[in-house]
Image (cartoon, rainbow, N blue to C red):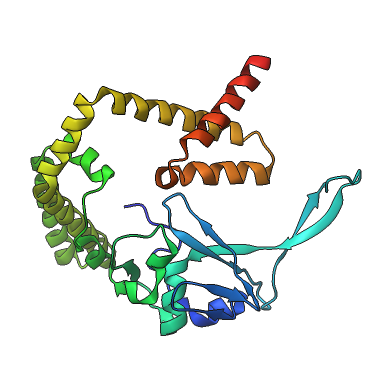
Length: 274
């Protein structure tokens, strides 16, 4: 399984303090001095916290950059401090419980992670990766896609294979393989459970998409516009491109179709002028 860079690694309160965080509140706010710390949203919709990276001597790392300010003819040579991003939920747990131990993940109890309210300390819990996979969750679009593209027997055969390899790894005393296969077993068991519990719901959703041609057409039109706008954003300067890509990431939640159409029309006009 693919892992995130900071997935199940140790994070301490001392790291946050060294990274410039001076205070955090239980409702998910972080402060650097009197100012609120910068937050961002990653591709999966998780809210991320920026902290400073330090060198071996404990000093902030300066990164030289060149900027051309509006109304100025000369390029300004300046610098910014190098930062790294960590999940706000992990930072919250480390701040109020001193650390997130290695081998554990911080889970959202309500299974939601797109709003700041979801990062309240009361909505977080510490789990092992296996416990996190076995946790009860509602059906997702990704699960619908997997359920309808592969039969249940595919996952059951996969589970039998992992169990056999797990027993062999125990006989060989291969600790690394035992750990990896244990996670794979828990993940596959969760897939089988979701499949059995939500297959009826998945079939109903698929049937609706197949019969409702207007909804299906709109889905493909939106996907086409999002792809074109995202490709165009790569040709813009860093800040403008970042803002447009952020809009694309949050589109599923905001559904600002008018703005998307306006951006798409700009892309088409630029292509016609070339």
